[in-house]
Length: 233
Image (cartoon, rainbow, N blue to C red; front, side):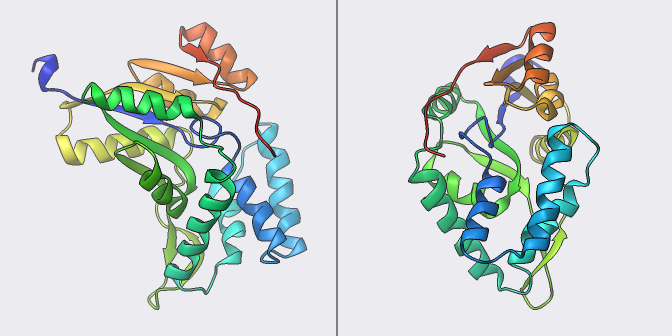
């Protein structure tokens, strides 16, 4: 098979890479302001965040379930509308999406590369982002809905984090193009958990990386990009 027949894909992490900040953290702040999370749940989320910062093993599905206690028992359409409004009010209106990410995505598309956003954040947030920014598809964390069409606190499928990002891209691309008929040509990430994603690509890009990812990028020869800009917190 010649290179020209291989379908090319580029993958972008979302939080900290495509946008400034972390959308689940920003979402929790909004839920607190709106009185949709209790103090006990908030304390558990905060303790998880501290452990995550220190790279301790954590249950990714558990913390997403905690956040989604705000939507448990609510109609999917109503909760999704809240998450879309969250994107507009907190990410779009505060100009959190990095213009460099938009430019890189457009340049890749002009070369015929399919651009995917692969993110641990919640699916409706990325769905809204796709309507406003130049990427072709996305893979994000999906929450389960019961037989009545109401959200639960269970994750539907994998949490799209760490190695799972690579697994999800492989499943997506194998199903659409066939194993061996595609190539992950570029990958962009900011966090040490994105190292497997960058490793899987022909070219890896560490965007404003945390210290562990920057060290790994220097060791592995990945390009380090500074896409930082001032933004209101």
